[in-house]
Image (cartoon, rainbow, N blue to C red):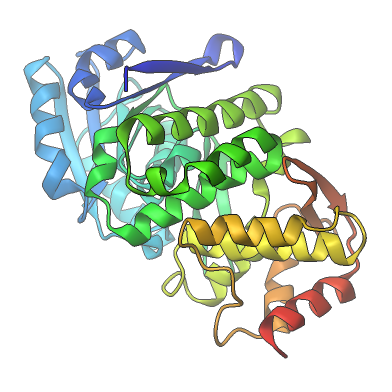
Length: 366
């Protein structure tokens, strides 16, 4: 696909999302366009899966352009979004001599992006950062400025809003992903259609097999549409005072699954896939959604080889308890993003807990 640029419109803090095959080779020029000059010391955060393939070429391109570059490589996986790893990253940043004119680059998937962004938000009260996602899942997490780390009692409970200067999305990186990570990424692509664009859902259903083969042109279109939906919502509601909460379809359930599985059994996309099915089931159960929303949601997710069944070994009551710690809950009262129809969702406050529990028990076979 040709290189395309979208924008998250936030006034003086507006930033581009540059999408294309091989655009990582343009990193130095794009950084300078974003106002990060070679006088800035750079700090690249990556993980042990991504770094062997991309870190040295990226650093070499930056050094050739005159940048001074240090790096920090963390273990892969959700367990690295922790206070302990955050402390290690901050120690390395201090040792590397970062100052207020420095910038952090997040080279990797959603975990790296969230952790690196939180480090940037809190280092010397906030420095610039750039997202360089290498996974399909990160087309969602790299856009919008939500950054943070996990706590054993809940996912993303420690965090900030800190927008990147640039999102540089090289779609060539997707061809190196294992199938499970590809499927996980499609969960967030599908989510954008389910919340805001039924015609996009139609398109995903029609082209599922071609998308699954990672055809560059078709996957590029899917990423572009997903990013455009998210960018429009973030531009209208940067700090989640209203509309932005709709991006959390399936996440209240999914985050609870991840926490109870200790971020080790389900990856994020898998947890959100199951969560979106449950949201549709609850919505139909309480008469909020049109009949058939659950069946179509489940069928679409299965087309992209995503799980939709209740996670083994989890008790519905335990899941409900963790859900009450969700950031959208107020005073212990649950608020869920529920579908009214395909492509139309709403934030529903004070959903009856018994209805939620009954829906979960049905799925769990309890």
